Image (cartoon, rainbow over all chains, first blue to last red; front, side, top):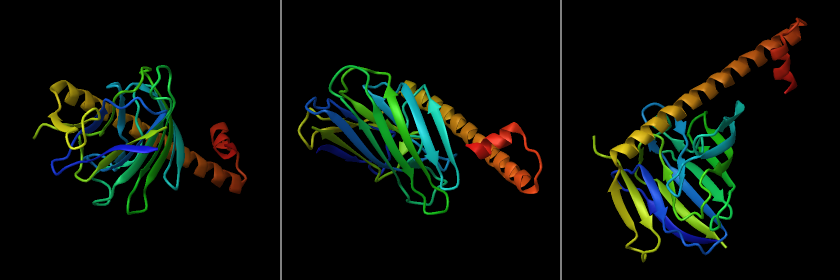
Length: 164
Length: 80
């Protein structure tokens, strides 16, 4: 596994991080995200994934809070459900997300698995396990993560790895 | 309010020259706002359903202990 790039959001924040012209030299992709968002209405949300600038896809999620568990599905867009705390979460607490995409350099349907934890230095914290299928079936040359509500805060990071 | 930006990392370029910061277009901002609304509605619905199931489970447990008949939906929450 080779780390291709790591990006840290600067003082002004950023709405998304996009890796373009991804080398087609590996088998699978792994992206790790440490994030917190500027969000005035929620405690924890997910991030969206753009595959070749297309966020369309299906997701099936198992979610848990420590006191309750539920499942969810979405057929409109690729997202992590959790792992991106907003202003309702303890100050300076960041969530963590990993997303693994198999067979990225070939065309055809791809499987995507996502683990997300919405860290919170308090009693409530959510985690999600997500199985996803991107709508876009072309070889993946660009991969983006978006916030739910426009900006990742400073010090959020995204790291891209290629698995050979 | 400042226009939100995106960080683009062009991996075809040498390290140190890869990152550019570009303002979002109006269309991109609108698209993300719509996504945020949709995701928030989905999360609210999911949380409401979780609360409804928790209430059903509590009611079923109380009826089971008291030896009272429960509804089919309450029984389903106990049987998984």
